[in-house]
Picture 1 (cartoon, rainbow, N blue to C red):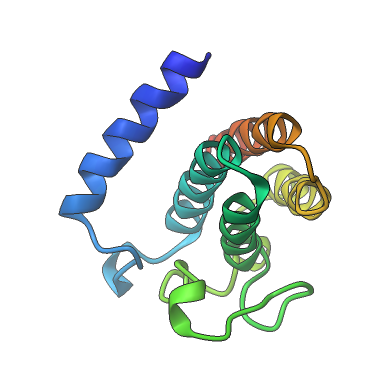
Picture 2 (cartoon, rainbow, N blue to C red; picture 1 turned 180 degrees about the vertical axis):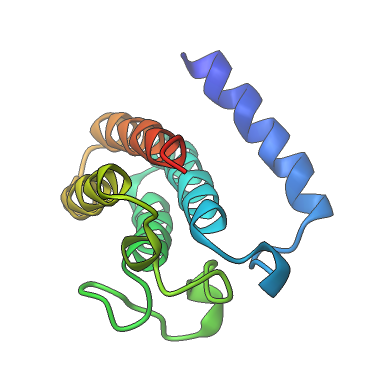
Length: 141
């Protein structure tokens, strides 16, 4: 599992050199919000191996993408704290059907729970589960 995640992270790092961190209006929408949130969850996994502080920052980014500006738990002192700023109103508001909305609700709850974790291994497990759940939510488009 770690090799798979490491390979995915390597691919995301390469893709990150080609694409901006925030979405452009042409890429805006639920798919972009969920993709960015999933990427941030994977970065939380990676950060979690070094301690939970960096992972919690990434999880805040996930929460921002899911709830959108003004949503419960949304926090952005600067625009760079919301990588989904130009992507939509928040995944929960942009869900295309009830099944997708339910998975986003579950992802929000999991993100909030993960933000309370203090152990690196538990943080990595929660971040992996979150990335998987966000991947499933993307399938409902």
